Amino acid sequence: MLSWDDIAGHTAYAGRRVFAVRRGHSRFWIKRNGKDYRNALQRLLPPWGSTQESEIRALKSLQAHGVVVPELVYCGTDFIVLSDIGENMHDRLHRSDPETQCSILTALACELSFLHRSGRWHGNALLRNFTWTEGRIGLLDLENTEHRHWPLGVKHAYDVWQVLFSIGKMRNGPALIRHFLAAYHPARPARRSLRIAACMLAPLYASFVLFKPMLPNDAVPVLIALSAFVLLAYRRPKTSS
Image 1: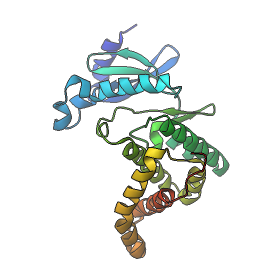
Image 2 (image 1 turned 135 degrees about the vertical axis):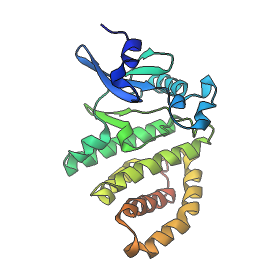
Image 3 (image 1 turned 90 degrees about the horizontal axis):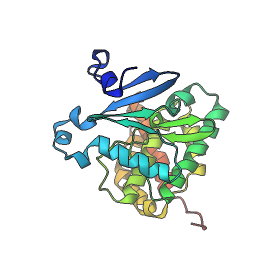
Image 4 (image 1 turned 45 degrees about the vertical axis):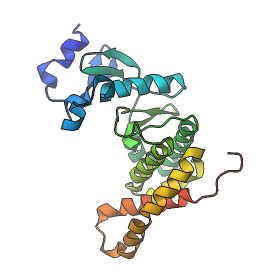
């Protein structure tokens, strides 16, 4: 059986940064170190600032807090091997009926609330970077280094924005967002950040509403997400928090 280093270096996978491989009856994911494959700025990062080291730290931290994340199977010089934890949520939602979609997004909102109230965050919270397997939410793609030094509340607000934008792109986005908002309750550090961000986004939101008939279809998800973001920012928090 080929070693992980042999598999990662095989010509069949040349130029591919993230790819799935089968070993026995299981599927695994090989991710090459992003700092060697993206932009010039990341190439200047020291080893502790690389996306690979960032993801390893995030995996261990979240796993210690009971969050479902891939298992770190092997760590190579410039790549890591992760276990497969199921189908990504974006694909699962698009092949599900409306009732199941609402259930999944309600569970996502509860999981994100737990994550944020635990002082954690995702960092790349698009729907494709979550999984839904056997009734549990899993987190994927935890390598982002861009937000590492942001205040905690800003990280939480960015997570929420990415989720809302992803849902807004779906055919029944507004209805699904309502279910998400009903179950998501921001942690205290995020409330102020949400309101500041909402104030900054208000002019953009107003211009989108004013020129909505002239906007291309690609801009509609942005308008939907902006509406939901502003609503969440100024919603009265639960008294128990």
